[in-house]
Image 1 (cartoon, one colour):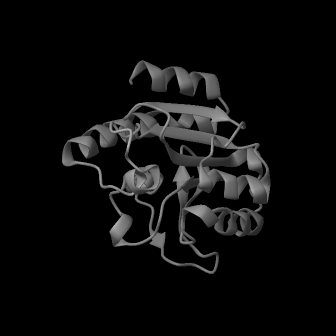
Image 2 (cartoon, rainbow, N blue to C red):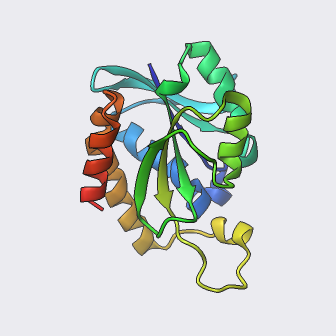
Length: 189
């Protein structure tokens, strides 16, 4: 069983913000597979369960807000007996140019508070799909404010194309073909 965690903040106020790119990605993918969401479960998260390429899969959007994501992820993993090697976290990355997608297993949280929270609860050995949101163009811009700004309609169109590429190649990641997944993602970026 695999667990896909989209990182973001709950509520309409944050729905289209840069920090919610993970929520948007899991919504996009789960909708394509017709998963039904169960909102605000006992795990303090929204969950959807189904199958992707014959792999039982749980999608999760923590309702704990970004900085406490690990508080929702740990109980979901414990309940469904999911190994860290079957955890895939999708999140924003301010250090990647907008629309660029990268994937890795393990490593640093790069200062991302959602990943820090998960690392504190579980350690670092899990997959991360990083989606670039870019840095603000003005040096005076506050990073916290920037990540909470909405994407433009044009930017959303670009993101949906990236989600489509991720979706088409997920079977590679689920069958432990990380390098092939990364190759396919980078070819289409």
